[in-house]
Image (cartoon, rainbow, N blue to C red; front, top):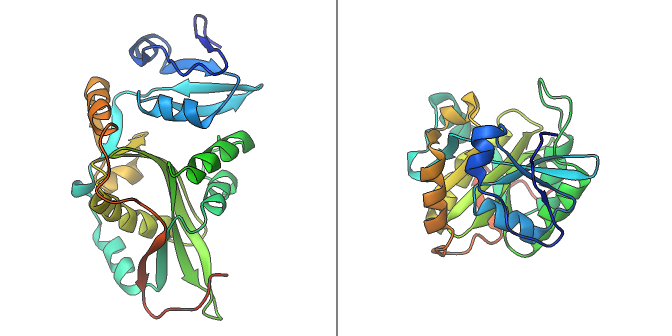
Length: 249
């Protein structure tokens, strides 16, 4: 671990200024021995997030420039738009958050040796979900008996009018893309003005993500996290395409 990285005391919700970490420590802001819902919420509001756990310590980072998506600038490519029109599926909100985060943690990913979503992360994000701060979007495909089975999804944390995207998974082709394509306009209708994507990837760029200077990102966080949504995100059937296939599997 780099020298001069602060170890946060238990229960303390104050973080060092992430600008120093970005300039001198590759974005590593601090470490802690605990991962609580309150600490997570405090971190997100400053543009900080936990990246992984190692030897009982949680490592908190800030990245710059920051990758964000403004919901009104969502781009759906021609191929995905055709899939959305023609495939049979359902998209739900908060139907099974524990299943989504578990799938995000266990689904193999190309060029990655494992997942950062250790059991302690799942416990804390599930707690955020129980208090209405973390939300999941599920995509369901029908099986041969017309029962809907979980095919993909994503989850993130909502504070004010900001949605902090965390992870997504796909067990079937295009399932996470379909979930995302429906989630973003829905979040916009609820009042979300900014989606934090953290990392710059070609996948997100195809959806219309952009890079933002960290100072500008923090300024938007300070404003938007203090505002309220136009309507709660809640739990609901968001979209069904094709016939209704019966109960979830």
